[in-house]
Image 1 (cartoon, rainbow, N blue to C red):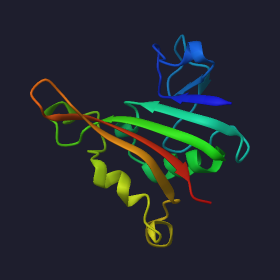
Image 2: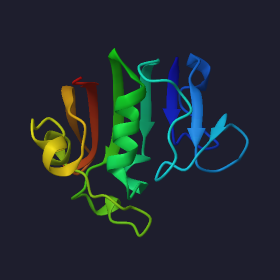
Image 3: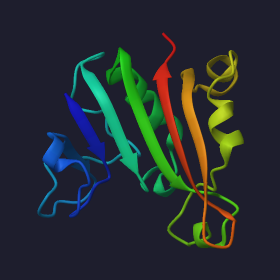
Length: 148
């Protein structure tokens, strides 16, 4: 099972068999849920791949959201998050709740992140900071696996 989270009306991975999960009921969305409060309607460790492009920065309660991703992802599964680089001017929008940099993702690898802050632990398997035309960072791609 593969999920695209926050794909909206233009999911990127629909042709590859991904289920599109979003917070709004519009054409193209398969499952509607509130990422801030709802639990994913899947059993633990049943999802192979999570693809989340330009959605994570819109979520205020990222602890709940990421912990739910952690819960449903198989041990060998991968979560891929693509976000605007937090210090890029295009990332500063009133609808963004997070300003994300590489350090933001690095926090999720810490051994004490759950004990102190309630975040389940992740392992980063790939982290890219993409450069734009003006040689400025504008986007981050982070692929992670769960640490159980």
